[in-house]
Structures are given as structure tokens and as C-alpha cells.
Length: 239
Image (cartoon, rainbow, N blue to C red; front, side, top):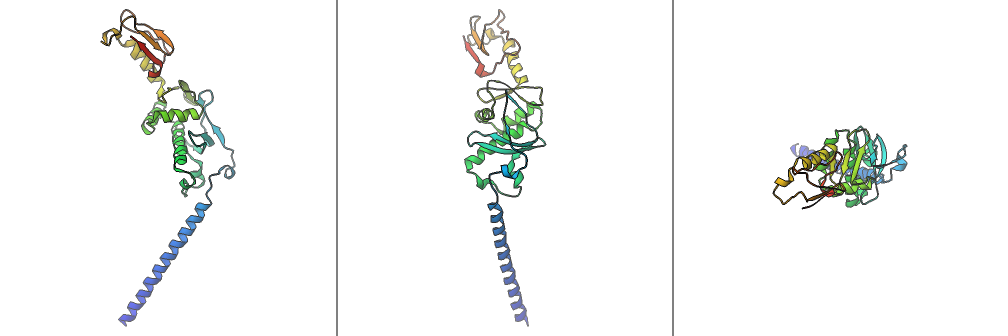
């Protein structure tokens, strides 16, 4: 009797094992089939035409919608912007699928970085927080600057995000400054007593700042007018 029970249990275990193997096999087939239906081409899958997202006259207007955004190296990223958040449109169309296999590693990194930049720009956060997020999570300022230029921005000038009263300044180095930071730099140059710094400055020293030449007054100060941009790339000093 006990041997009969043991025999039945072995049959039960074998049946369970075979069923598990069968279920795993079906799952693999199902996943492979789903992945096979994922395509890079999204234009035919959305009813709303994709709009070009770019800076025009150094102003970018990011509203909810579907966009094509020019990347740095591999053409375009197709993105979806909703509720102050941007993501690759493929993730919206295939929320439960792995889309990385559709791209080379370089291509996927390229479109992801551009999307992350747009995600910050469209976040709706205060302008100084936007700059902080870019500096923290995208520390390669040259890459950031190049990506912004791919989106149509002109470096060395002020730019705007539609809906904000504050402007931003994109230096040729790719470093982004707020208006407040630009003004603080100017004030710093004006309040410094350059004759007392001990670095050989004299009243004959020439400060070329933002395309204009300035000299120290009798008290060793500069008198830079409002609006003068004193970022390092726009400053040249001849002692």
C-alpha cells in the first residue's frame, strides 16, 4: 500500500514538473511574439501628427503632445510630453515591453539623453531648480550645450522656456546660467577692489567684458552697466 502511495506521488511530481516546463515554454513564445510586434516606427500608431520640438528665436514652447526632437548623433527622438513629464513615445505605446533591442547601444543612449533633457525643461519646476537638475544629473556641460544646439538654441545668448518670466543664458561652454547668477557675477566684478588683490592689476589694466573694454576707476573698481555678461568665456583681462 505504501509503495503504491509513493508511486502515485512520483507520478504527481513528474506531471507538475512537465506542466511547469510547458508553462515556461508558452511564456517564452508569448514574450517573443509580443517583442516581434514592437516596431521603431510610431507615426502610423498615433492619431496625432508628431510636431517638431525645437527652439525658435531661442524660445522653446513645450506643451502636452507628441514630438520629434533632434538628437545629438542619431537623428530624432520621438517623445510624449504629458503633465510636465517627457518620455520616449515607444514606452507609452508598449508600456510592458523591452524596446532597447530596437536600437544600438549608442543610439538608445543618444535618444534617452535628449529625452531626459526635455523632461527637465518641461518639468514646470522653478527656473533655478531646472538649472540645478541639469547640472546634477547631466554634469557633462559640453554634451548638454551640444544637445540644446541640436534643438535649435543659439549659444552665447539668452534663451527662454515659454511660460517663464526668467531667462537663461547658455554659455559657449555649454554651462547654463540663471539671470540671477549673471547679475551676481556682474556685481562681483564691480564690488571687487582689483588694485588691492595683489595680482599686479593697475589702473592701466584692460578688462574686455562682453565685447567692450573697461578700466579701473581711482578706487580700483569696475563700473559695469546692468546687462553686462561676465561669464568666463566673455572675459579677457590684460594687466
